[in-house]
Amino acid sequence: MRVSFNKTKPIRTKHNDEDWGSMEWVLDDTLVEGAGMSVALMEVKPGMTSPAHIHANCHEFISVVEGSVEVSFEHERVILKPGESVFVPGGTAHGIKNIGENQAKMVLSYSAGRRKYESV
Image 1: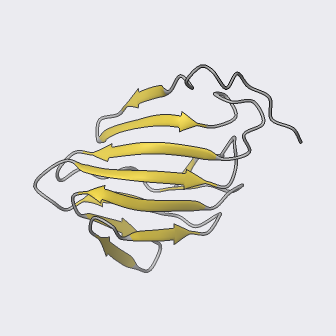
Image 2: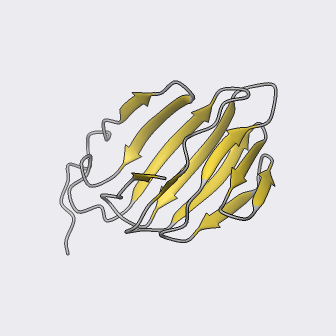
């Protein structure tokens, strides 16, 4: 599939504020038709947790830029610090908790341009 978009204009992002923090979508199929992937900048407030969920149609890659987070899976927890990352296979329930004293910032990447999100 050929992706066609105006290369002379920046991609306009979309921002979602949540009780636990925020997501800024910098790339997905709604921003660039046919992108076939998604990228977001996620911030989680100190002590807060993003709700547990799954992405049935794609994998997710989480890379921590600032702060410390705990990524919870069904039977496992992984603590990540800046420069560390984790791969979440599609269909795996997970959530992200900020275990630090400051805002946690991450880059998230998904293997689908229109990822499915299901709360668990």
